[in-house]
Image 1 (cartoon, chains in turn cyan, purple):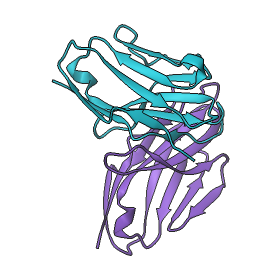
Image 2: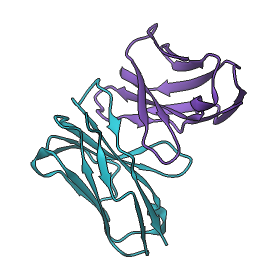
Image 3: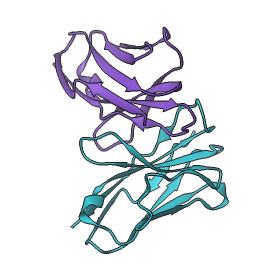
Image 4: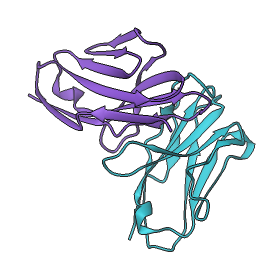
Length: 114
Length: 110
């Protein structure tokens, strides 16, 4: 079974530039998560989708971050404009159902903002 | 607000030296507690799910247990390949998100 695919693996941008990350979840998984993981910390949820609807985006900095999941499959996360403090690993995960099932993670995209 | 605290932050063991990692949580209505392993440069890898106090799960040298306030990940006779960061996460109450702790970085020396 193919895992969660993310691209790119690495991205370096200057502050105030924009960047986009892509995620393809495990086939059949209805729930998709985007997490931000700063070095030395645990993952912090940014946004959670159930199919193509948003379940939770309470911790998403909406003035600069946006995400969409068209057709309930692939998802993109965008940052515009980027700040230095956005440097982190952005992890995408998916799970079969909304509750009580484990989430499977992709390898992440390491973003460096200079 | 759900809170998850892991201790210690870092742990160094000799090969074969058993120990335990702690995950304490403050939530209303625990739905599930999850343990993950994360290797450098990779995403977290799922290990266990525990749903109720008293439950235990085992996988090779790892054993996870759950009480009403905390979970332990016991590592028996660890090997260098067990070196990783171990993360726990909770799903609780009406919240449908996974809230992670900061992790324990485990190093097993040969």
